[in-house]
Length: 323
Image 1 (tube, rainbow, N blue to C red):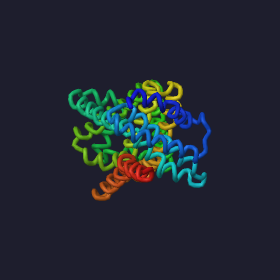
Image 2 (cartoon, one colour; image 1 turned 90 degrees about the vertical axis):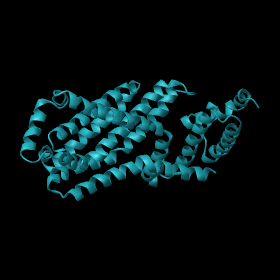
Image 3 (cartoon, one colour; image 1 turned 135 degrees about the vertical axis):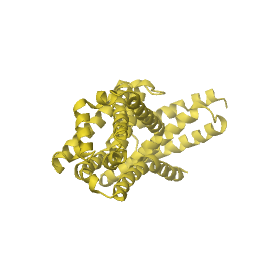
Image 4 (cartoon, rainbow, N blue to C red; image 1 turned 120 degrees about the vertical axis):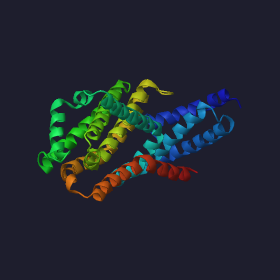
């Protein structure tokens, strides 16, 4: 059968799937499962006879969406939060994994630009960080504690203030994606340039390792979470710019719902980073090197596993269940 005829023959059935995904067609789990079986058969046929076709991509996307909906419909409210973090978010991360790649690539590129700019422009650090902050940091370096700024205020006050600020930055990074991703790019660029310039400034002053020991105790999860929030913003922007087979309105509804869930998943890590910054980072200068390194590597490994490795594990598990 020619691909055009195949699409024409099954178009109505696939449209029924799209309506079910959008919630415009009320079906119980058994009805969805029956439709899902037909869809998997269509996907297998398309993979066999049109392996390089966009039809395969489209059907694969529909299959993953409807599979999630079947299992979400069957869940109970009692384990909703557990399901959200254990299964729903990892599957969404796998589905949108290319946006994570884009966000991390952009992060490393813009941080590198910040480093190079600070290296070749003596005024760049002051332009980005401000004269007051730079002068204060120079004073702290001379006194023997490059990260003394984290000692200001009480533990609880710092924790609450820092966490609220980080959540606000993350929310902007995500929500500004509504401007086609340009707003997210702008917020992300600001923070990445600042990070690159900030770290190179410490390198210039000969206290790079001391700064790493302090900043990255909380920074491993804080910065990683911002990258994920930027990825969520790009997903939101892409849903408006590239609706694919959906109307722009429906594409935005799906994109907003999925990207917002990914954004929400960063909250535990952002709050944990705020706790570390408020209660632990201020004492970093007194820690042994091995202890600081352990905290940094442990927190980085934890968030990296959840966002970069665990989604593939869950996807593989769900794929085996489907088969």
